[in-house]
Length: 431
Ligand code: GUN
Ligand code: ZN
Image (cartoon, rainbow, N blue to C red; front, top):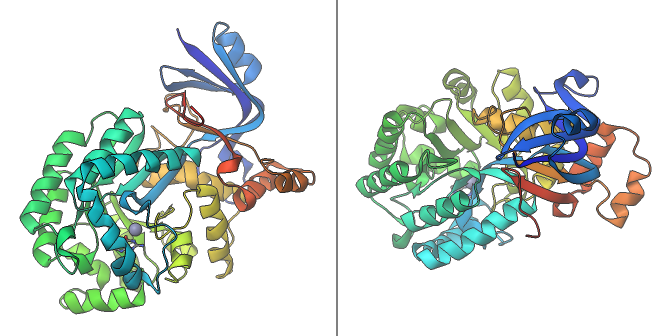
């Protein structure tokens, strides 16, 4: 029957963990296993039981490492793989100096296809098995993004950026072209294999009111698609958005007025929020996405996770490559931890690892498919080694609990701690 049993210490969250004492929020099996058949998880539990259940199964032994659901990155930019680590004074300077010129190169399908290989290798090398990506304005970039992800069997979300103003000519579509090209991509890719489409107006600064209206029409016509954009990242950006859309109540109001907000709306950054904007997110179910390495790199500001949660709003967490500085969701937690520390908010390692797995899946409404090791889920998994470097091994000598091990992983870990990444039960690293 082509079953495989993966042996290791198995960890999977069932709900958001409220800190040290909340061990009922997850399943942890010390002598554990995950039984996989045809790319899906049949069961997770005690190794002895699963081996008895499937005596013919092939055995892959990852002991003593941790087996977890693959990481989920809810905001990053595919055409910025060669922008990462580019100097910029702030968001708008960085966009104009590096990012926009670089994205023009994605009109070339061959360039986009080559970059897609590097992009996906970067994700899986770092343990990420699902990501939500902005492509460039060119349909060629979205084609490359979807074709490569589909060929690898990954669950991916993405969309062609819609942008028709305040950008170089080579990066501008028109309201109608942006609509038509997005619609054609939705027809081709949304629901093909494990692909999902996100209607992607880049942000209010680069879309005319006509374009945002048509983006809203696309959202209304395609209710199972996601919508992604940026909001309230940087104070100069906010001032420009307000000047361009003086009728709107606030920055988020621009998107609200065009019908872009729903539970499937992913709003990158959300740093400098007005009280009304928080209420709009609470009432529409739109999800803020925290991008710590990017927010620090571009000096954008501090994301206030606790206030949003107190209002019942679920946030995603993401790398935001290439404003973000690492593909690693472990390093994203490291920097996120510090951003919250500066506001006297605490991120317990249980909460953190729930966030980059089940939590981000919940933000996408995909928790039955990804983000846990529950029976029926895709066998998208990561194998983690908290002793991947000599320095980590030295620190590990003093680790006594699972929480301490997870904390070591999220502070000192990166791709070197990712022993293997599985997509649908298929190994991705070093193959
Ligand atoms: N706002 C609009 N475009 C971008 C982008 O590419 N990166 C970031 N960080 N913010 C944006
Ligand atoms: Zn972004």
